[in-house]
Length: 304
Image 1 (cartoon, helix red, strand yellow):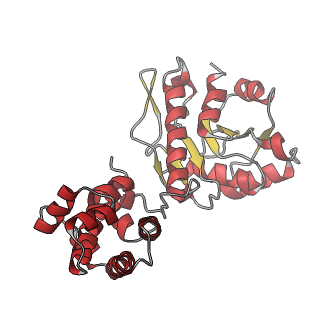
Image 2 (cartoon, one colour):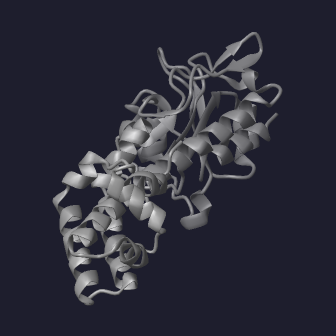
């Protein structure tokens, strides 16, 4: 794990300080004056002058960095810039280069997993897409732990397998829903998890979740279970429960059933149970929907 701040400290700042030290020396500054202007030690200036501090070639080659060094060097030399003003100029460029630019590219090179995330990432945005997706994955993992650590959960897994899923706030397709690839299965009374949660790997549960949201349900997490009338009855005691037609296309059937149920608005649909009783070639299934995957898992665990 490497933070973008480490890229700034380890690569950007040494390079820019070295370039500034060289610029100021070319403008006639003494080693002591360079040290005072940059707020560093004379020994550091000496290392910069001797070439003992490595420069990052991509940073040196960037025209914006070169322009910054020229402007700051000139400003410090003629008195137009104080060291504080120079610091502000450098900080502004750093923030610009961190947002999908040079420093962001260097960060991805140091952390390849960021590039693999396939989502726009802003390191200073608390609501960035990557941060939300990581939160969703964390919630799915929590839901999985809740269920796999619960004695008896394997008995609730349908023949087609179970899954734990959660979508992003603006989810539109299955690619916006995280779940377990391959589904959970019952192996000798234990729920086996085939892999780490990913986005875009659940067509079945994701479709039900997205359909319920389309119809107005305020839900983002889901767990599917083996159908049993007693299970439906137990879940219906504390939350809205809706049956849909398994003979129709799932997304249309769920959306139509939830919309026709005239559910209470707002908090009334933060948890919801939808189910179908089967059709030719279709196993009956229950879906527990909640605000998060972790919450849906806690509801299911309460059945045990």
